[in-house]
Amino acid sequence: MKLVLIGAGSAQFGFGTLGDIFSSAALRGSHIALVDINGESLGRVLAAAKTFIGAHGLDFSLSAHTDRREALKGADFVIISIEVGNRFELWDQDWMIPLQYGIPQVYGENGGAGGLFHALRIIPAILDICVDCTELCPDATIFNFSNPMTAITTTVLRKFPQLKFIGLCHEIASLERYLPLMLGLPFEQLTLRAAGLNHFSVLVSAQYRDRGTDAYPDILAKAPAFFEKVLGYSDILEYIQTTGNIPRTEGETGMPDIGRTISSRQWSDRRLFRQILERFHLLPITSDSHIGEYIPWAREVADHKGILDFYTLYRASLSMLEPTIELKVKERVIPIIEGMLENSGYEEAAVNIMNAGLIPSLPESVAVEVPARVFRRGVEGIAFPDYPKGFAALLRNYAGVYDLTAEAVLHKSKDLVVQALLVNPVVPVCERVPELVDVMIGRQAQWLGYLR
Image 1 (cartoon, rainbow, N blue to C red):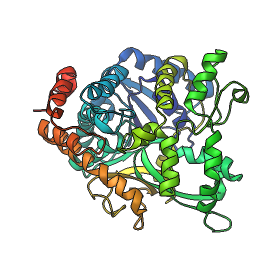
Image 2 (cartoon, one colour; image 1 turned 90 degrees about the vertical axis):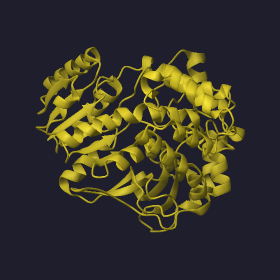
Image 3 (cartoon, one colour; image 1 turned 180 degrees about the vertical axis):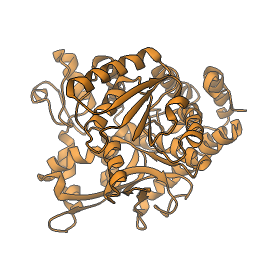
Image 4 (spheres, rainbow, N blue to C red; image 1 turned 60 degrees about the horizontal axis):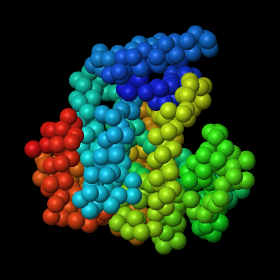
């Protein structure tokens, strides 16, 4: 096998993915091509990986490339995790400039005005990678970890419907952290299915595996008391500021001494989450910072302090944490690759692929996040013909934004960008939207200058 990691100069992605690959017996003997535009960072990851291979006697070979075309030749699997420009500087612009034009944002990374401009910057770069893949490794399976996931996957699969392109996000892992503690039983005793749009998804069904009975009534009954006490980002930030210690969490409930330090933990980061739980009777997969980007009334109920504290922690964590290579599977991409090699047919909890009828109440040509069975030929999404109508209506409100975002990139159209903002359910203004688009193109001309 030949695996290509694009964005491998990021120690967090590079070290984490290498650890996953090195843990796989099925991939022993594979060649791993590391790709990044930053040669210095790439060199550090390569050196660390070679040292690790030698120390553990592993059967893998490595190469490093700043020219991705050289690396992609003959690849079997390509894994993408990239960002363009100065991540946080641009993110701040995405968040704050629309605010000046009267567009409030709960977060500003994946949905709303900020998510749109983020998508307009990064999608062309990923399309360029896919162009190279169609020429150099047309049969490769391509996994994408970059955000905004739904916008990227929708646009790529519209332009390259023949590509085996799969979006992956780790938010689904929240179920494995919470539900065993909530229900008091091992995760393996549950059969779960979640679906929706990326970062805008809910648990649709839950069963006790041994009994074959519905577990959702117990989840709905126990979730309020459980999440009222779960630690949130504000709790963790307060703990760090008070003690000077950086806690090592076990899921969301580690840190045995944190409870003596924090002042409160009432639905931390999950006040919008709580509304979905109580009004729609569904368990969201992610917290307010993500799901709040898509719902117009989110800004009324979301935990804004928790979201701001998360942003502070997220920025700080990239400098505080020192990633290392570990022989431990952390992401789902390697189990999926193993399932393909074995033609296993196992059910993977969440992949982002084109809808094509999987959730009939949503447009066919927009990507959805659904479970899928894994075969040698690729992944086969699981359909939800009876998807909950209330939440489906929320999803439909936003699906048109992704439709127009993809078309704006593919046609390089500024007019379609304006339309994507005007149909966005979280955008409450109209007249000055064209000026906002011009300002953002001017500020981010290096990445948005293609729009005409």
